[in-house]
Image (cartoon, rainbow over all chains, first blue to last red; front, side):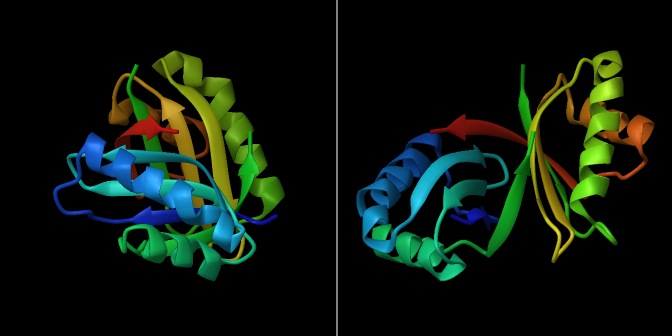
Amino acid sequence: MPLFMDIHHKVEGLTSEAVSAAHQQDLAVQARYGVRFIRYWYDERTGKVFCLSEAPTPEAVRAVHQAAHGLLADEVVEVHEGT
Amino acid sequence: MPLFMDIHHKVEGLTSEAVSAAHQQDLAVQARYGVRFIRYWYDERTGKVFCLSEAPTPEAVRAVHQAAHGLLADEVVEVHEGT
């Protein structure tokens, strides 16, 4: 299954609690779209959020965010993982 | 130790082999700067690379890339991790 990094450049008023709540909403609806959110990273100062997911397509990643909370990512990039 | 996501927006001619080799060079010098690179993700089509690291400061992350291969990140963002 392809891996995606989606990037939100600047979420206004981002807090740890708000991003955690949004992520829980993603998890609640992701199965409908065949998506599995794996992990996310955020910065309260800049409002940046990075979400790593497995999904069939980038559209599926966007659909989860749309259905869950409407906060769409600015970019959804298919990535490979190195270690 | 703070966690950082550094982002390279567009590495020209990025290949899986080249990014892996650059990452190995990061690992070879990181200890001098107190940095630990954890994982990276890349997209050969767009040339984007995301590196996750633990480091004392963003300058330390930049210093590793500079010393290892000179490919500096466009952004180094201090992040928190959610799961």
